[in-house]
Image (cartoon, rainbow, N blue to C red; front, side, top):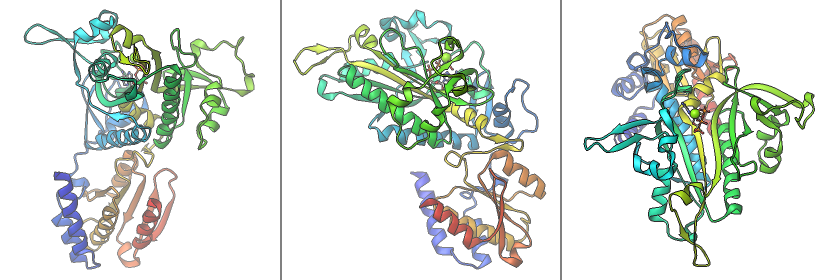
Length: 467
Ligand code: ATP
Ligand code: MG
């Protein structure tokens, strides 16, 4: 609500003062002091030193770029810039879930132990589970995953086969007391996961559900600027090839993936064919045996991967043990078929950086970037350059583009280095000369390409990008 009001206010001010007069532009800036993202006022604690335990590049860059703050081993707080990325990922994940008709819910993080005793997993889960007692000495836990809890919800509220298929998902914090939390948010103890759970009348229907999730995962990762390889995972006794881990290729990955090189091509094609894709060879190193590998060596790629998603069909395991039954079309009660589907939302922030950085810093894919444009005012104390910067700022904001304005009293080199480090996709550089020529520089972070342009051209370019 508050946000909406601010936006509204900003738009009114934008309409009101959208003129070329420098005073008006600067007035806008001053009036909107609180709403304009000015770097001099932004909470961006950049770090020169990185913690000793930061072994991999994404972990170091996340600290250096002020994205996170370490609270305790494997437990992080998200600072403004990092949170913007996390929320952008969440938004894309949600859009792709909603697109295939899954329902967004939010289960509590704290669960009663009773549910897990019922399923038989309370003891089996072991030390990774954070166990808690309340004031009455009753046993609770901080959820490491939610199969029991969602099964309880569905068994309470669902009565008939007519309500199936059903897919409930959430984006919620999990706690797993990992023995070796490391690599920052990639293997945390507290981490954000999208977890979804499906309920179907029979195997045929469960298989369709599984396939639609499979395809939607590939689409989700592609939108995040990533190529994900779906690797066959253990699926227990029942499922055929109905469990996959989605691996992002990166040198620092914890797993080694052996896969058919046709994967990359197929996974990036517009129409993903489940049967074709899931029949291609892709396994983790433990399962790869050169003697039995079905494809010739020259068709095989071996790369390191980061697991960013895991989907799993498990039949009636939980519905049976927890007594979830609904009435079938023949009037008889039956146990629905289930599956669960996870995406490591907070791990993805690290994984994206692993897959997309250079020696200057992060290179955010546009879809998840915390801001799309950074305006770098090289003079800063000069009304004329500020007026140009403000004019562009106003125009971009009114187009719904997120802009960060570097108005710090710093040398150009420092400003360029910050913009590169935090990985904003486009930098617009306004210098003394710009006020004479009317030209500013537009730099593309990824390619390093710089073009001189008028403000109008820049506005036009971003307008075109949008449509
Ligand atoms: P891993 O083998 O990496 O421990 P998992 O098999 O335990 O993963 P799932 O239970 O399938 O993972 O969880 C779904 C997703 O949640 C994983 O694919 C991963 O992206 C993410 N995830 C799991 N554990 C962590 C963790 N400790 N920190 C951050 N993300 C995690
Ligand atoms: Mg694990």
